[in-house]
Structures are given as structure tokens and as C-alpha cells.
Image (cartoon, rainbow, N blue to C red; front, side, top):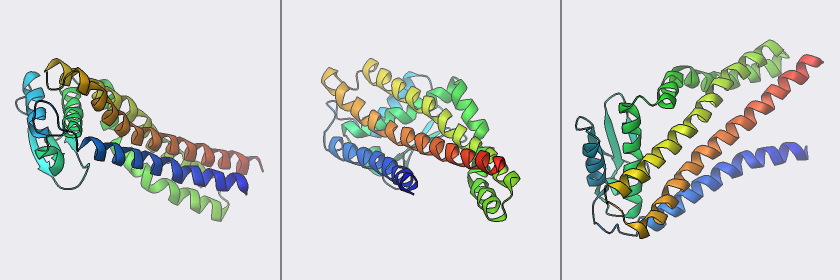
Length: 225
């Protein structure tokens, strides 16, 4: 029983800790202005243009830290604070999302692979627990196995997301430095913002792997009985 409590506590604590780290880091560096006094939208536009991605548009989107790149519409969407903001955080996040646009333009392998996983990963994420719970109540190991297989696709998606996000952050740093948007004393601040954001993906992957291992072990134990 203690083992189960520790397991579930970790599943809750790790994501909450990662989210708290991101929010606190973002809050801190959203109050620090970048030396060139350029908005997140201006940062995104400059890096896009420097890489010949004139066709990629930039839009403002609602919410906080709702920034993302839409590969279907070739659009970088920045939350209001980052779209209009002059902060170090806004510059870092804008550059990161443009990193995804550059990946898309270069047909980055992991990004293409992640896109191919979206339909089955989404389906697996929704259906896996239904099959697993049904299998437990009906004592049907075949249903548990189906649930574990579906879950494995969702976990694979989380794992493939890691190199995609880390690569986008590396591209962001390189672009910010080479374009002169940030100076030497600002590199440390930018890395802190990018690293904090990466923690959420690492935490999500760890939780997903832990859940998969737990349910796979459950299937193996049930199958041996």
C-alpha cells in the first residue's frame, strides 16, 4: 500500500513541480526587459525572415503560455504578453516557437515522426484507460494488453516530443545570439527560460513512462496467475 501511495504521489508531484518551475521562471524574466527592446512578435519576425520563412505568419493568441507553432497553417502563435512584451521571457519563447517553424521548413525527422503519431497517440491516450479498467473489472487480460498497447503509442509521442523541444530550444539560442537580439549577459537568462519550459515535457514523459510500466507490470502479473 505504501508503494502505491508513493507512486501516485510522484505522479502528482513531478508535474506540479515542473509547472511551478515554469511559472516562476517565466514570471521572473517577464519583468526583465531585453536590451534591444524588441517585442516577442518582432523577435519572431526577424528570425523567420533571417531564415527565409517569409510565408510563415505570426498571430496573437489568448491565454498565458499558450504559445505554439501551427504547422498546418504555417503560423507562429504568441500569447498576448509575449506578442507585445519586451521581456527576456517573451524573446526566448518567441524564438523557441520559431525554432519549430525552422524544423518544419527543414523537415526535421523527429518533428515529422511526431506529426505522424498524432492520430494514433490521441486515440491511444483516450482509449487506453477504458480498456485497462474494463480488463481489471472483467478480469480479462487481453483487454488490459490492448490498453497497454494503446498507451504505448501515447508514451512514444511524449518521448519523441523531447528531442523536438530540445532541438527547438537549441535553435532558438543560436538564432537569438547570431542575430544579435540578445547579448552575452542575456544568454544565461534566456537559457533559464528555455530550460524551465523543457522541464514540463520531461516531467510529462517521466509520468507517461511510469504509468506504462505500472500497467504493463499489471498485465504480466495477471497473465501469470
